[in-house]
Length: 240
Image 1 (cartoon, rainbow, N blue to C red):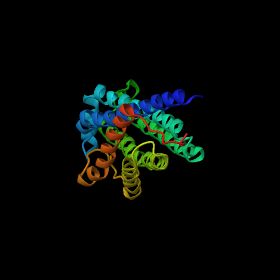
Image 2 (image 1 turned 30 degrees about the vertical axis):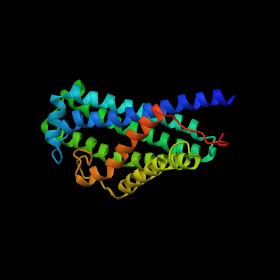
Image 3 (image 1 turned 90 degrees about the vertical axis):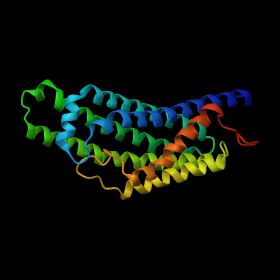
């Protein structure tokens, strides 16, 4: 493969990774603002169930958005692996496996939301519905959703820490940008281990501490997404 062809491949792969980053961070933000923050009432399962029943279509849009984020995460993981396997194939493969485990767990978490809305609006459930069943069943699945949401965060944080260590090592992007990525996902890794979800979704409403923890990674993903999409990666002399 000529240098020109290799550079073109790296540029396209970096662009795909950048676009995937932007889809993930923008998609997550939009579904949070326009769907989940409107429907999930912190600490009140009955109100949450009522909101979902009244706005089932909106909740399903949120589920579709979550699935798009999962698919984009898989695309991003593969693109980053292709970019970074020349730097260290074994570490790049480790990061890919961690990110794919994150995708599988995230898909399971989305499935819990789908089961919850089916229980509230499906014909089989309508036949046996009563207020206590609504509260118990929806409370169970949303609580499982909250608990399960912290587990993928462990895998995605570890995966990105390895990927951006390889970016730092490769000098494909500025060192300060790669270092910021390692710092951002290191914060999320610590957060994921120290956070114990409450009975009702821990992710229902973000408090000040959550915002402080997630803000660096959101800023980083916007920045790295735009960087990879618009500038791509720079292979130093002798780096290929």
